[in-house]
Amino acid sequence: MVSSNADIGYNSKVEGGVIVSKADAVINWIRTHSLWPMPMGLACCAIELMAAGASKFDISRFGAEVMRFSPRQSDVMIVAGTVTYKMAPIVRRIYDQMAEPKWVIAMGACASSGGMYRSYATLQGVDRIVPVDVYISGCPPRPEALLDALIKLQDKVSTETSTQNLFKVKS
Amino acid sequence: MIAQDLLVALQGVSSEVAERESADWPSFNCPIDSLVAVLKVLRDNHGYDMLVDATGMDNGVDASPRFTVIYHLLSTANHVYVRVAADCADSENPVAPTVSGLWPGADWHEREAYDLLGITYENHPDMRRILMWDSYPHHPLRKDFPLAGHEDDLWDEEIREETGTKVIPAPMAGGPFVSKSSNFEAQKEPRAKDESWNEKKEKPEG
Image (cartoon, rainbow over all chains, first blue to last red; front, side, top):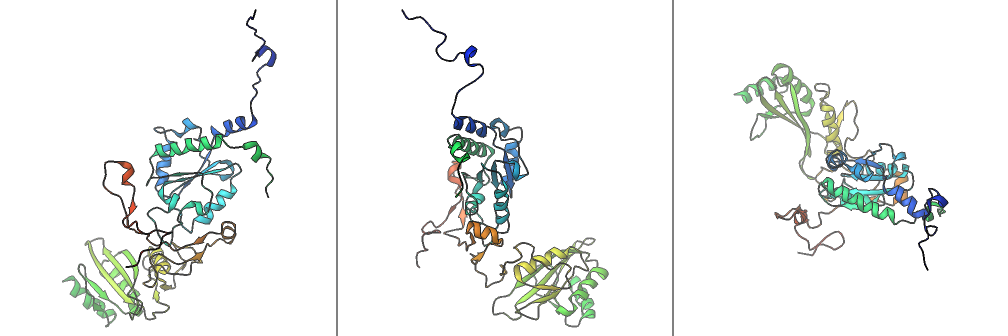
């Protein structure tokens, strides 16, 4: 006769408060829900970025409300606006100052491709100078689009092999 | 007649001041040597106390004189404008006197004209580029500057080596880019009018 056995499976008396999981799953879960943005506001997209941070759209619902104005403390650079060739090396330098792991969102037409500024003075897409993870269309995009991009980035972060990256030797 | 009175008064400063063709406000051509004196008279004796705009103009690659500096003044008491233009003597290295001594606000206007047209202002307190980066070799508003721009190096040597990115010409690629009127938000995104060519595909001949 088979009786129910409380000793099989999770037993809090035996195992205490311990949950067994994969390191990747834990690290990615932590990273996913606390993406601290580096607001690289360069044009009108920055206004929508501010709106996304304010109470109506409330980016803090996704754990990204801690806008850090120091690259040393941020995880995701949101390039919001037109990047001129004069500004481009500075954007890259700030990206280099961010600690790993780091991601980039190209917000709006200008940051993604130069947008309406097909000009001698405008960098034709910020991906020419920093690696971009998520592009947002729109001129400017609505705050919802930014939130959507953030969720897409969270999906991406949650599938990364973080432990391998952690111990990876840079060649 | 404001224009006639002003012309007489300004010819007292320099006999070479002449009326300039204008569709709106009184406008004068002025020899560049007496430009500052003429503007000072307009400011002090005729109430044109506000410098609305200081700019320059390229009359064409083969034109002589090639460069002209232009000043728009406003009388804040009488609400009337006046325009003063002066041709730069040298077409290769155009030089104009600064009026930042009369109006401190002319400082940045003249830096912009220097940046985009290459007109050097004598005795300017801070004659640097204002929009383009300091090592940029061209003057984009000159008539011989192509619309797409020139290929150049990025100004930061470290970033240039790290990324391999260059300043590239940006041809209009089928532009201008216009948004169609549509009830659907997605179809309102600006697109090139002529989509037969783009960055990767050459523009068809003819």
